[in-house]
Image 1 (spheres, one colour):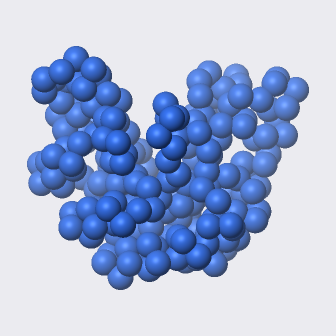
Image 2 (tube, rainbow, N blue to C red):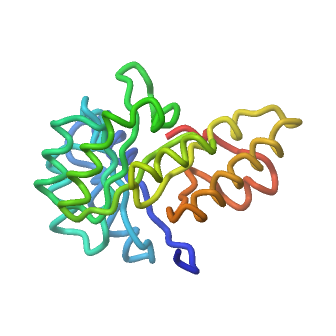
Length: 209
């Protein structure tokens, strides 16, 4: 496990604004380049099945025009797997998707969905990208991710962010315990939308993605 923190910048909602306005501005790829120039270690982009923000052409440009590792977030579908294998990003994070949601509302079920997820993880590993599963912070989900061979897990923090004040410490402890378990099992935990100031003052925004 790395002894230092690395900053990955998600550019999805630069694309959301572009698409709402029409045209080509603001440009998420330019935003990615600016983030890297300012010190970001990598860029995250979620290519959704409905293409509501990031487009296929954005992924092409991110791979060719931005000098930083790309973490491609995607659903575990044959279409998305083909795209990932074609572009070979540095990393792929498998996430759940529902068309009616505004943003990702929870983690993958790595326990119940292991048979579905296994061939996707295997194909991605064989092709080279680092693999991550976006999961709920529970021991069962972390252990299932380890059995599946994911290189890392990203922990959904929505329950903590939406918890009543008297439940926040318990939810934070649940996340910390899941992260420590992931480290013991050999996976590097990543926290979704978790910042030091939120830990001190309680969540200031959504933990959904």
